[in-house]
Length: 155
Image (cartoon, rainbow, N blue to C red; front, side, top):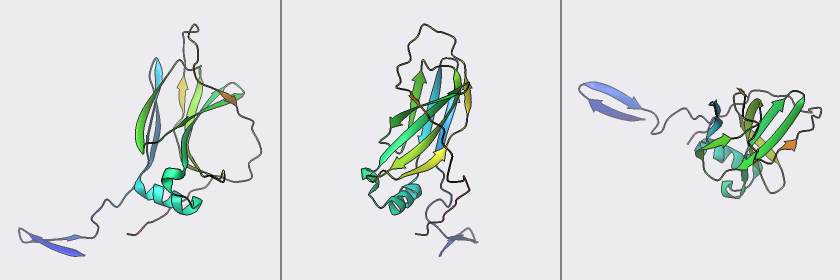
């Protein structure tokens, strides 16, 4: 712990870095598009490398975009190479959208890092073609249960 004397007040500095790290994955709806924004912090990258036992640069990082329209659930993915960024999506079909930030190693083990908010999107122009490759999602019984997980990384 460092003691720093300024104007007769003692300030104790415990850490040199921020004490809170936050990953971000967000969908923002506009009239003619959806904007997908993400940020992956260094602490999460270190944790993923430890769990998947591979260097982060060797892992496949993707954003999976889901569209639920009635009873049908479709999915498309966007491989990403940057820790932070923005993608603007246009000409999407009408539906309820959400996305997941997923990391996969060479053994095909995957970890979902972050789940986004849900956005209802209504596209009025039916003359536009949808340029994304959509796959039908088969709903299977889950063998895992969603839960809260937290971690602390001391440096």
